[in-house]
Length: 402
Image (tube, rainbow, N blue to C red; front, side, top):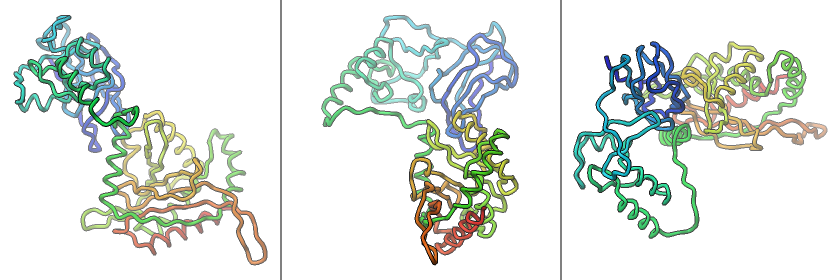
C-alpha cells in the first residue's frame, strides 16, 4: 500500500527544515526506523527515520530545498507499486510544467491558474512550486534573475520569457550605487535573527560591567592543564567560570529564573548554556547540572559539545533547557560588551579578554591578570542591585581560586 511519509514534528517549535542529504534514492528498499535523510532545522541537523518498511517510490524534494512540517518527504510502498500519475516532461515545450528533480518528476497541480486570480491551493503551494521550462530557467540563470521573486503571467501559472525580461528592466530602473551580493537569510542565521528580535521585544535589558582579578586562576589553570592534557582533556578557563557562576547563582536565584506571565519561575537546577561560534552562526549547547560536575568533567563535556555544535551534530536535548548562559568574546580581543539575553532566560554573562593591568595596593603597584565581565539582565525580573551583588559574589569566587 502506498504511504506518503510526511516530514514529522521533531519538537521545540520547529516548523520547517532544509534537506542536507538523502541517504536513499528512488527504488531503494528500506527498513522501519531506518534513517533516509539528514534535515537541518534551526536547532540541529537530525536524521529522519522512516516509520515504515518498503520501497522508496518517489522522493519529493531535492537536497538544499526547504520542507515544512507535514509536507511529504517521500512516497513508500511495495515493489511494483506506483507513487501516482505523473506528467512526463517533453523537451522544448514551453507550456509544460517542469518539475524534474534528481530522482524524477513531481506531480502537476490540477487546479487551473487564471492571471490575476489564484486558488487557495495554488497560493499555498507557490513557495515550493516554481513553474518554468528548462529554457526559461536557463534564461533566468543567464540574466541573474531569481525565479522565486517573479510573478508568473503565463498559461497555467507558468513563468514566461516576458516575465523574465520585465524583471530585468525593472531592476535596471532602480537607483544604482554599485555591485552588491545578496545572501538568503536562512538556517541558523535566520533563527538567530528571529530570536534576537524576540529577546529585544520581550525583555528590558540592562548591562553591568565589572573586573575580576584572576591572577590566581591563571596560575592554577597553568598547573592543572598539563595533567588535563595527559588525560586527553583541553582545560580552558570556562570550566572554572562555570563552577564559580553556579555557586553565585545559588545565592541569587533571581538570576537563574524565567518570567512566565505573572510568575517569576526560580529554577533549582543549573543548566548552563555556552555560545559556540560556528560557520553557520552562534549555537548554544547546554551543560546540564553543571553544579554537580567536576572541573575535568565540565572541561570534557564542553569540548565534546563544542565539537558537535561546529559539526551541526547536536541533539535537540543538548540545546534546550538552559537556565543561564555564558558567551565569550575575549577570544577575539573584546573587553566589555552588551550580550543579548538568551530568551526566555533572565540573564547572560559575557567574558572579555584577560589582560595584564596595573593594580594599586596600599604600598605599591602590581601587574595582575584582569578578566572583564559583562552581565546583561532583564530589569523586569532583576534589579541593578541584585545583579551587582551576584557579580560581586561571582568575582569573589573567581578570585579565591589559587
